[in-house]
Structure formats: C-alpha cells, structure tokens
Length: 78
Length: 144
Image (cartoon, rainbow over all chains, first blue to last red; front, side):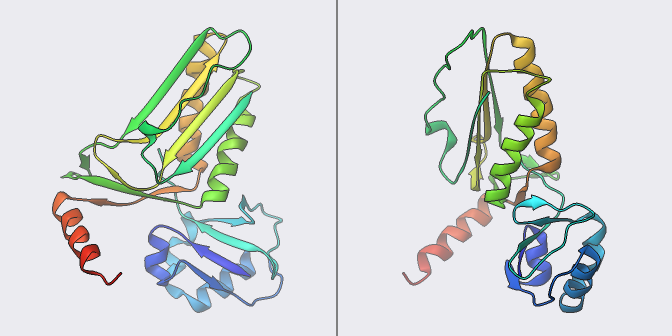
C-alpha cells in the first residue's frame, strides 16, 4: 500500500510517501508495520488519525495492498 | 445547496466570485481569513500551507452537506490557498448565499469550526522576511 505523510510527519519519516508491504491489516497491524520502519512516529501515534483512500478510517477499517493510506496529524487550516 | 470548493496555489483575491444562485437570496455573507504578521510570538512575513488535497476537498464537501440540513443555505463557495501566503493576503475565503442572514452566519461559524478540526490542511511553517529572501536567493541560484 502507499502511505502518505503530511506536515511535521514528513520531517519525522524523511519522506512524503512510501510503499508498505504488510498485506491486509487493521489499524493495529498498520501501526505495527509503520513503527517498525519509522520508530520516530511513536510519540505522534496518539494524535494522528488514519485515512484510507481519502476518507477517515473507522474502527473497522482494513487497509489493503491497493489502498492509499494517509497519516493525518492535527490539522490547522483556515 | 450548491457547493463549490477550490484549493489553489493562486492568490484568492484574484479569483472569480460566485454569482448569485437562483432562489430567494436575501443574504450574502463573506468571510476572508487573512494571514497575520504574528505567529507563535514572532513577526512573520508569510505562512506556508499544505493539504492532502483530494481528501481536503472531499471533507469540505462532506462537512457542508452534513451541516446543510440544520443551516439551510442556497450556495457556498470555499477557496483555500496553499503554498506560501504573504501576510495580509487571504488564506481562506468562504462566501455563502442564503435566504436569511441567520442561516448564513450560523453555517459559516459551524463550518469554520469543523474545518479546523477535520479538514486535512496544515500550516506547514511560518516564514520571516529574512528567511523568504534567503529562499528566493537559493531558488535563483539553483540550476534550471
């Protein structure tokens, strides 16, 4: 799956996007895979929301290989 | 309710305004959010915005559709600027046409609150005049 990072998370990971090969997973599985690759994300986990294909993920959302996943830190538009 | 959303790197003040919709228009409310010269206690020259653009546009439309039944209006235009926005220029413009002022003001207030909670747009960083000038010099020096 393609994973997108925004705002300060780009500084944490050093990239705006990456490919993650973790099969089909729930949010817990996704975070486990993300933190293996980017341990620096750990302090931000509590405030980051997950999106799947440009929609906020819910508790039941599963993330698959063809999905575009985004990590959404607290927003500050307007 | 007609909804028009546009996220752009262009200057918002130069973009066309929404024409009056058909229907019983009795109020037109416009909000312009302007970049201040103070951010986190320092004097700045610009703010830089970034967005997850497809989701931001979708979320704005979703929020307005969700708010519409309680605050029925005729049309809404939302413009949000991305990239470096100089102090004094608009970062966001919201224009609402409604039958009565109350619905328009209420929709505007609720929408702006929700935008700041849910729409994936970020103030990426602030720029001082010196930093902007240095960035300009850097860009000019960069090979084409």
